[in-house]
Image (cartoon, rainbow, N blue to C red; front, side, top):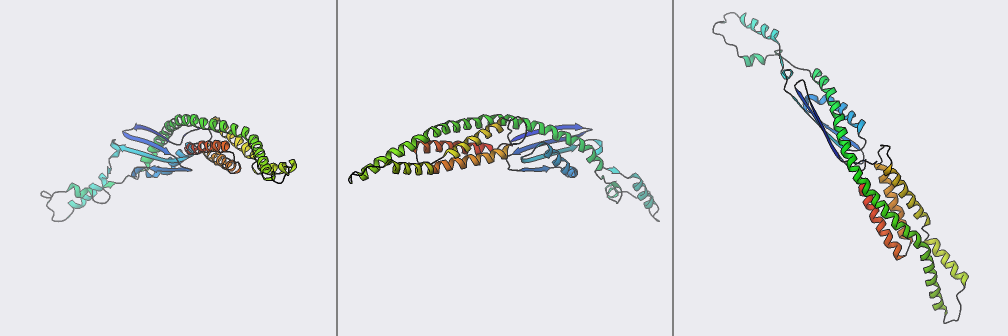
Length: 295
């Protein structure tokens, strides 16, 4: 079953007072391209989240947004009480300082080196890592579910166009012998009209030679056979239930379908076949548009 490249999935969790949220969006792209947006304190997890997404998705332009809010007590920075006591002891040891009237500015004290212990973030990343990887998988599940639903719609549309091409191609096949006979009749009439004044009769061998040249020049049997083969392979791929990405293969096959249709159009001069080929090319163009949205 084919899958669309367009989708959206999200997941969130609250762990130990911290909120984690993941949103993943995907749109068409010929290749896999992921962009991970993380808050500053979780930038160290970018490579791991990118790898987690790449394991689940194989094609498309992916935008993953991570939101993080810590409202727990762990969000507060730690105060180095030993450093404060040391600073106060040094202040009290200053000669001539009036201990009774002296005042300490807490804000200034907090700005002194070593008073606020900076969090290296290692513990925060460690706790966030397992949570976010799980949320990425959950968001990818929802995104893939949406892709599957859109893929079913694409499948119906692609089958419709393939059926239309097959119907027109069947008419083209039946029309080929008719065009050769029509050319033979027209050629005989023209030659008889040109040779009537001289009283010369049209020789069957000459007529057959010209008809054979025309038939060779306008022979589209190979192109029709290849077009049928590509169409059959296209149907097999979109109906396959192996879960493998098939968008690039379908895109290539649609180009080959158009190539064969163009060759048939350039070879054959029959009006009915030309009309049918126009319809076939129109259906192939719609297939190409849809195939570009298949993963």
